Image 1: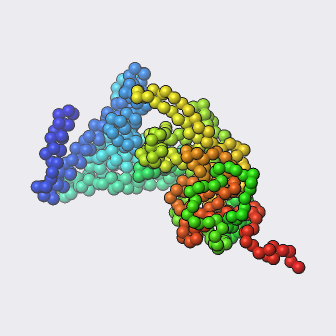
Image 2: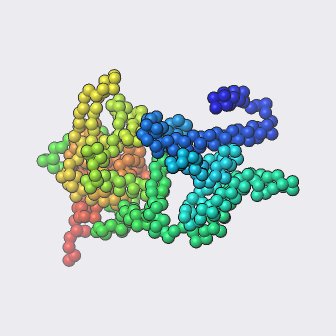
Image 3: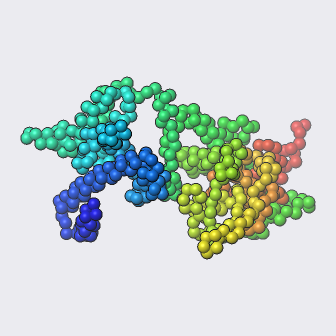
Amino acid sequence: MDDLLAGLCASAEAGAGFDGVDATGLVSAVITAGSVRRRVDAVLTGLVGEVADRDRRLAVERVSPGAGCRDVTELLRRALRTDVGTARGFVRAARVTHREVMLSSGELGPAAFPAMAEVLRDGVVSVAGLLAAVGPVQRAGNRITAEEREVVDGLLARTARGEDLPDEQGRPGPAPSTGELADFSRVLMLRLDPDGAEPEDRAGERNRGVTFGSLREGVVPIRGGLLPETAAQLQRLFDAVGNPAARDAPPVATDGVRFTPADPTDTDPTDTDPADTDPADTDGADAGEDVCDGLGDPVDERTPAQKRHDALAMIVTVAAASGGFPDLGGAAPTLVVSVTAEDYVSGTGRARLEGTGWDVPVSVARHTACAGGVQRVLFDERGQIVSIGTTARVFTAVQRRAIVLRDRECVIPGCHVPATWCEIHHVHEHARGGRTHTSNGVALCWHHHRTLDVSGWQVRMRHGVPEIRGPHWWDPHRGWHRPRTHHGTPPPARTPAHALAPPG
């Protein structure tokens, strides 16, 4: 194998530039490289089968733990420098082609699919082709007999070699593609197993599952299948978040959240909290300037899929904070985001989600710290912990209940997510001196909390009450407005007195 590797390296160096090769030569080179790759697939599958076989023996004979890996999948992922899906493919291929040693006689037992195993060793099919061919047969399980499985194995092998389409001289025809081989396998199983799989209730119990992929393009792919009752419950929660009519709440006006212009004469001599005013708000957009009442709901430009994601994020956040989950490492299951102090202050660099190894923007650390706590851990140049400190920035249960009672729902206009589902946002950032106090906290749903710094919405506190300023398209005057919920907020300050007088 070392000699083969040296030859391949020499070929790669010699073929680094293919400028002088014509189209026919390029196609021929690709075909040859494909043959080499299939042979390598066969070698790797054999190696994986042997490693998996030894990992089931006594501890001293196990290969993966001796290499510092949890199992053969992790060993492959590290040794091949590949993803989990590819590593698992080799493991599945080894299960159907490897001949294990019989404990009773010490001899090699038969492979699950001996004919297809030989096709793989001959370099006729790749691991992907092998799995596509045997997959439908494996899913049939015990619904076909051992004799039928043996016949199907032989038919699949003949088809893979092109022996099902011989020419006039009896020579094999062209080899099928992976998709064609999979289709042929499904046709065979439809003939042998016309009734299909087991009833859906038992199949669902076996097939249920959720799998997370690797971080790619800013998101973590998720795939799997939910039991019907689980999916229905999740859908109800989505409806509760996205549809005001689905909540058990008092009716909401058809035009959504109403606002009243803030009253500039509204002063409270007993209110001296420094978080109530923001000295940076000196752009001339006075809170009492003339703007229209009943501003319409803002347009939500999120796709349905994005809305469901944000609803799921909110559900997960609420569940984690409910206190009903088992402890993890002696504490509640808490999202931990690590970032250097310099990057946190400057807003540059990357943060890390502990327990995953995923790098995320520093903004994730800022959002997490706003609604959670900060623990400062200092290391010396050798990586030794030299100091641990904490900063109290988490709103207490009493403070949260008070803010929920005051705001009722997310304070962004048109958003009807109940405040009990929302995160509490520090209006004046804690890192810049903002206090963890009811006069500095507002209810924001998961989506609006994450997008507050880029959405055009602004929040400030005035005499302990939140005020909102929206984007220019929502309010051309760019005035500050006090949220009016459906729980009895006073009418606008400039409402004529005769309009409030009782009839007659």
